Image (cartoon, one colour):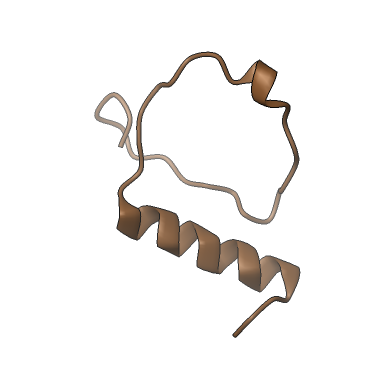
Length: 49
């Protein structure tokens, strides 16, 4: 949640971004959320284990 609104990670639209462009932190993810996103990215890339 960010500003009391639920958001989603669009793992089917992967892109790269320079660390220099990441200037303001607007929120954080729980460890469980990060694990779910990682699993979805692996599935999109065909890297399943």
